[in-house]
Length: 429
Image 1 (tube, one colour):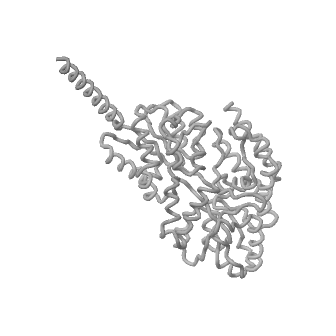
Image 2 (cartoon, one colour; image 1 turned 135 degrees about the horizontal axis):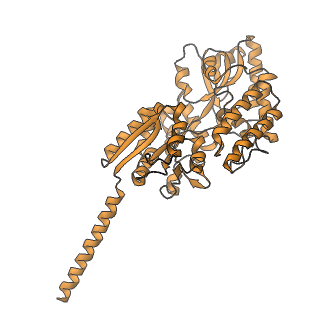
Image 3 (cartoon, helix red, strand yellow; image 1 turned 30 degrees about the vertical axis):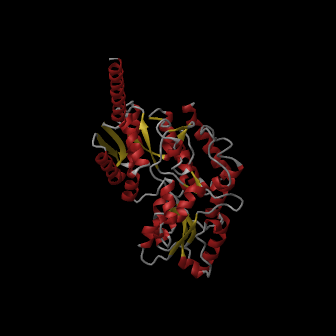
């Protein structure tokens, strides 16, 4: 009887243990309904990832609510600002991660993403998804810029084409001298040496002072005085002013919407632009183009534009388990590959970036530009400032860069920007 009693106790304990194990397994399997807040322009790629996730997780239903990009931040502000519990996963631009986290709209995800998982992302993207030492928004995709050039204009001046190797990166000072030589050789007042795809926008202009070690904000994102108007920042912005007003190698009176068209028309020697421009330029009849790495100043270091879209866990989510499961699938799992392939986007994951370097499909021009992009993403990428006031900063600094391009004194323009941004930062103190 004693043995029978022990056996019964053992069986009972085993049943309880198995029940607990199966219960834990059931709890770890996501279920229920979640809603993803995204924007219309990414619909096809986001929906493809959602469909794939639901196929692999039939107990989960994902609803997608979308708004046009131009209205997206306003929609987020209205919906999450009212402490809505209707959303679980939020698409967020790199620049808005800090603001969303500061306002409590997205929660830290350190407990869900291990250090090993975070190491799978390019370091600059992890930094961009971090707020006050907490990881709040894993990256979905990335971006990278190169310097495109017109080979025919180089030929006209009998100059050698620049190298594709980042070890032989041109300097901004060399860009000025080369531009002058080519402009003199072609002797055409409608042709200029350089323009930026995103004229006056911080995404492409901030890497100028970044190359000289300058930043727009303090580390905590709450101070600009002494940073935005530092000597190094002024030096970079004086160069930006000079190319338009002294050296006259860059056109004035143009906007971001004009830049690519001018390059494709053969009116620009050098154009800073997104690496994905390779596709459009390859299809442009009569355009003989090449690419070279994004330049740096002679006495500085390489700092290349980066940053794209992240995903955040809504603080109002009522189904965090399913939301986190989808976030991981979307950023680290098969869903990320589906998104990138459908959208034609650039990767934020290190292993995907490595494929650009080893896959023979990227060995030859023009797809070889992705090998350059992979290098830049892992070595020279410099994200935009992490600050709760980025929206206000972007408006003010864009206007400031425009003023500098049009000849306003650099020190005067930057000091004015500091005063305006300080006023906005006071709202967050």
